[in-house]
Amino acid sequence: MIMILAIALIMTIVGLILGLLLKGIDRKIAAYFQSRIGPPLLQPVYDIIKLMYKQTIIPVTAVRWLFSSAPVIALASSALLLLYITIPYIFYIFEINTTLQGDLIVVLYCILIPSIAMVTGAFSSGSPYAAIGAQREMVILMSIELPIAVVIISVAWHAADSMADPFAISSLFEYPLWHNAGAFGVLGGILLFFAMVLVLPAEMSRVPFDQAEAETELAEGISVEYSGKLLAFILLTDAFKALALSMLVVILFFPYTLSQLFGISFQMYGHTLTPFVEIVFLLFKIIVIYSFGITFIRVVMARLKISQVARFFLFAITAISIIGLILIMLDPNMRII
Amino acid sequence: MVYYYRCYNVIDNNRGTYVKKINYKHLKRSLWAYHMNTGSCNACDIEILATLMPRYDAERFGIKLVGSPRHADVLLVTGTVTEKIKDKILQVYQQVPKPKLVMIIGSCGATKGVFHESYAMAGPLDTLLPVDVYVPGCPPRPEAIIYGVAKAWEKLEEL
View 1 (cartoon, rainbow over the protein chains, first blue to last red):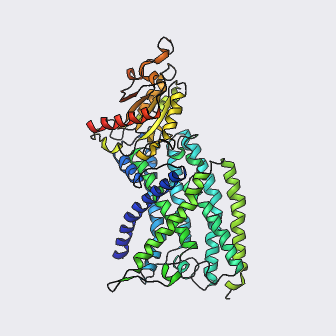
View 2 (view 1 turned 180 degrees about the vertical axis):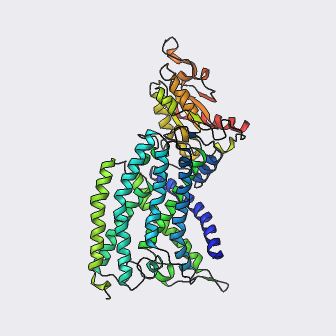
């Protein structure tokens, strides 16, 4: 119990730094595409430090306790999301036997809580810009909810076919989606991956799906009234979510470790270094997923209209993910029963 | 407009007074600018955007434009201040959390420029707000704006 608490504390701090670094890498890559030099890698850290020193203004029209508690709830729940996704995988890498399995349904709900807290804070701020941003955020949340649920259910369906506990996160590493898959399964997996990668920028509210925070038309939308420490909490929430969601994509679709892929193990002076190399490999996968899923799309695209976003996710992406689910169900190789 | 004014009246976190010692040092690495046009002819605005473009790339120094005065550290004011916009610029200045800086971009804001005889002008900005950096020019080149930011940094170091 104490070990888990200690691991959770360490991983929260490490996750904070890594999430901010991930945002720095994102800005650096975006600058490279626009042939700029770009900010230093630690720029998000400098921003957070500066915001911590600034004055925090609470508008008179705001509901004071709700306005100031919403970013804290968002930060706490996004940290919980990160820990919930990561700790089973870390145990798996370090080959620690535990009863801690994790639960995909809880992850599904934890993804929602930071956004809902932000929406609550925006509505309670009393600013009309924030209200419009919050309504748009709700529309986006409702339209991406079904694709995420379908992706998670189809991965669980596959795990159940492999006689594993369907909704445990740990069964995702032991029976990855491509494990024992036929042609239908591979095709379905590719469709699901496509759907999940397109859901990623909408969940993170980045261009082209950043209607809730559109800084040119809504003056930063849902975070318009936040300043100082509360704004820093919002940025930290964003960093946690960036790390956690790319980690979720990695775990759902590419949970393979180096030793599984190539059968390599690393040793030095008789001590095994394999888990640490695996963690570096995991970070590499996270950076690749984040830059392909968010940075590249953010650089090449402009902001869509909110009606286009709702239509895109409710019809196109939902259809793609349901087709993926049906293909995975139909795959004859996966049927053991 | 009365509603707008009441809606955005601000109170400080520390019961109306700001007692903590203001620490400007941390602004140096990340200056977030809020750009306000107070009756400019748009030339200075375009030069500000040119400063942020790839050729000069102000994001190298952590400078970025934000959409809300609540997020801002430095207020970039372009143009001479008209009577109509006087109340709004004062409100926006109140909405920026401390510590804050004010930069005037262009000659108009500093001296009223060619509009000095006009009846519609509420005067140079420094009669209304405490101004930290003046960047003269009609419009100032991006190099001049970057030099102004460097001057602001020097000023922050002295404080």
